[in-house]
Image 1 (spheres, rainbow, N blue to C red):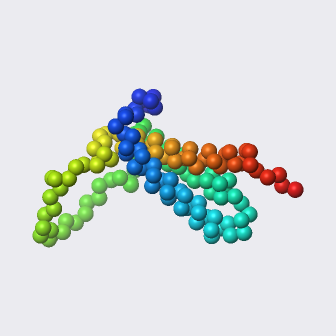
Image 2 (cartoon, rainbow, N blue to C red):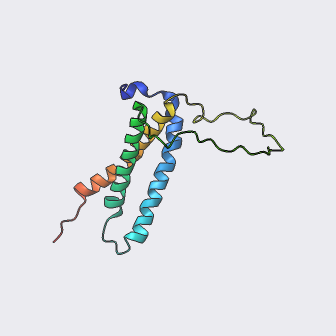
Image 3 (cartoon, rainbow, N blue to C red):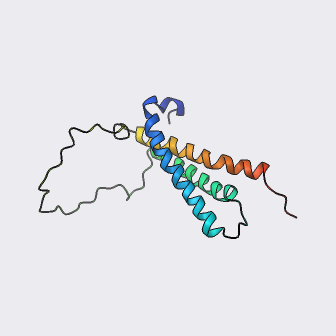
Amino acid sequence: MKLFPKIYKPIMLRPIIYKLIPRLVTGSVLSLLWNRFFNAQKTFSMVERAFFVLGIVFFAMAWVNYLKLDGVRIHYLNENVNRKKTKHKLKFPIDYSDEEPSPADSLEGNDDTIATLISNIAAGICFLLPSVFSLLFLSRPTP
C-alpha cells in the first residue's frame, strides 16, 4: 500500500468536500433523532453517546474503503447481473454533450475511493473528537 500523503492529489479537494458535507448532515440528523426518540428522559448526553457511535461507524466505513484500495472485494455484491433487455427504447434521446462533467465524475482509477476514504476519516474525526473531549473533560462524577 502506498503512503497516504503520496496518494492524495490537490484536485480531489472538491470531491472530498462534496462527500463530507452529506456525511456530516446525515450524522447530525441521526444524532438529533437519537436524542429526540431514544433519549427521551435525557439520561445520556447526545455528544457523549451518539457522536461516539457515529464516529466509530465512519471510521469503520473508512477501513472498508482502505481495504478496497488494497484489492479486497466482497464477492457477490459488485458482479454484473445479466438482466433482460427491454424491447422498447426511449423516444426522445437525451443529449448530455453540452454539460460539464462534475469533479466527482472526472476522478480516475482509485481516486474516487481515496476521496471517499478521506471524507469518511474527516467525518469520523468531526464526530469522535467532541465525544472524546466530552467524555474526558466534561463528564460528571456519579454519586
